[in-house]
Image (cartoon, rainbow, N blue to C red; front, side, top):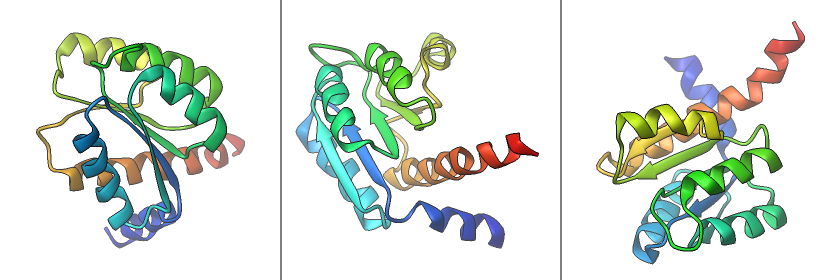
Length: 142
């Protein structure tokens, strides 16, 4: 367990793009990441805005809601994965279904989480994904 905690601290200083059409939810998610050592949380209110914003900030991690106006989270994830093939993408949504959990990885999503979980769990899972994305290229070289 100690090694995992040590590895998770490597996520400190990272930039997160938080995408949700509800401003209050964006603020709560951003506050959770910032209070856990992430350097920057940039917010977007729909998938289209997320793509434009991500091009400018080059995020280390992206959280997306599914149901949003203009462009939904699944469509945005598909575009974002093409732009950022190694960046972890988490769908953080009220609408977790087995169909969503099946479809999301095909569109580039790393993890689907329900908004009913504690925000601390979202942040913990984000740390795990960031550690995996950092260590993956090293493992492939061996």
